[in-house]
Length: 449
Image (cartoon, rainbow, N blue to C red; front, side, top):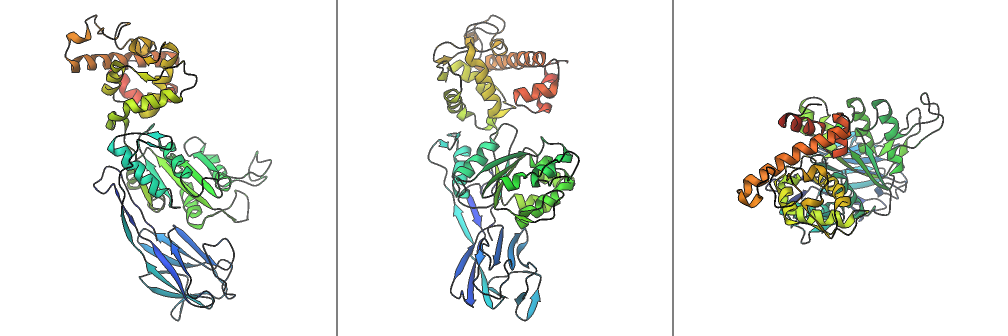
């Protein structure tokens, strides 16, 4: 089976290890036919819609499945009429070793591993779908995305808030064989715990108070497409076994229903949490983590790819609407941006630029054209004036930048909190920042609500 575990930032970030297998029919009606086993779960049976369809009349409609687990590849009988055998022994579940032969109905099949290690070079261009970046970290990511998108493997995208996890999921969808199918987004942290199960798997009429009609869940809505599960780390622990079952069995049952509904969905999950730490703390199931992290891609924070700032700013400005004709930022604005830590990452950068557009005249965004919070960072209306009235050029470059950033951070927070009447949660959402980041900056600058 295929297993890719790739985490950007490691020495093997450009290398993908594919643990795949091949099924070959050695005896029976389909003798000589072979199938590449490169999905998390591969179903065998006589019914169309299985991954491996056998013409053997003694094979059940859904006879068996091959499942990739963390510690190996398992052959599992699905309650077939005539059974699944390894040698003379009828089995319900067994690990497959290299070249293991087994029998379903009157057909004998052989499983053979086809491991492959692929070196993925960095993407040559500075753009991939709706993402831009010329830094090595981003071009490495683009190269991996291009290769992984062609598979049906489950992907876990990790990174801080605002780094572009949904953009990654959309890129995977658009570059996949599922591009013509639906792309469905579900935020695990945006729905109350009592409704998460219904949103994921749907419900039947009368399943609970207020369920006046049946409703499809996001798994059904994403059938033959891609389901993006955002903030998967916020999924309640009690629902994690049900999600694991849906991922492994590729079928769901609506709340209050009895029918089993097959779904053909490629899942991409994302989180800003450290799921390994969540597993160690008992807040996230280890088996679900390994089911999601068949491919694990870590997105770099904006402060770790500052060389992309100019390109990102141009990209955001050119896509902003409405835009009075601003196409790029002035060098002094870029210098201020490069000195900032960007706790909200690319999302925060987009907010800053879009807020500046109404105050800008001409094609270049300057310090003078920035909104009040940003103009206050320089303490004057011109780009060459320091906060205390001293020309910036009279100070060492590093000191001038630090003073501008300190003033910018404080004034931005004062303005932001005033706009939201001291509500830190609302201010954090408006700024596309974590609440903890807002609280940390408030403490740093001695700002009280």
